[in-house]
Length: 206
Image 1 (tube, helix red, strand yellow):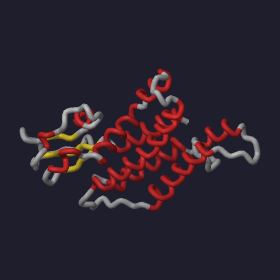
Image 2 (cartoon, one colour):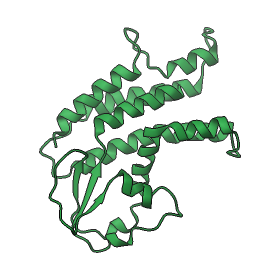
Image 3 (tube, helix red, strand yellow):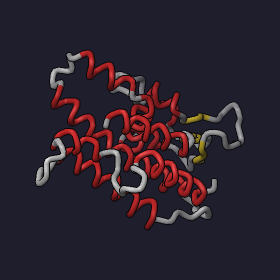
């Protein structure tokens, strides 16, 4: 997989989707504009914090970090990127819980469920943080959706669908069948599409 190409493509999507043209401001500044009513000398921590996260992603991740397409561990790059995106969702969730601590306000809860890509990111972050029986897998292969892989009757594909079945809730059936297997393929979502969906959901939140 060409991580350098993916990195460049995601940077272009990130900039085009989240940055305001010819101003140097991110779309998070919309929160600042509304909550300060653009009054001189006023500050707004929510808009500022999301703006700082976007600026840090652009500078530290997209500009300073250079992935290698010769990497023997592409999962390091992809998992790190997904966790960084997940941190945005964590802050969103905190605010949702501040607004609706009992999770009984339908408007907020319905909106949460509509954040399709954010919920996919949450699934993968849960898998990365809490791998469960995946810890017992031998030498898994890592690919991105759309890439070819050697498939047999013994192959277990860990995809977004698999995660929905085993990693979306504590009530899910544990993936016991992963134990001691050496035929596991981890299929990440297409990273460019994940970035597009992330930016769409984040802009919706703003």
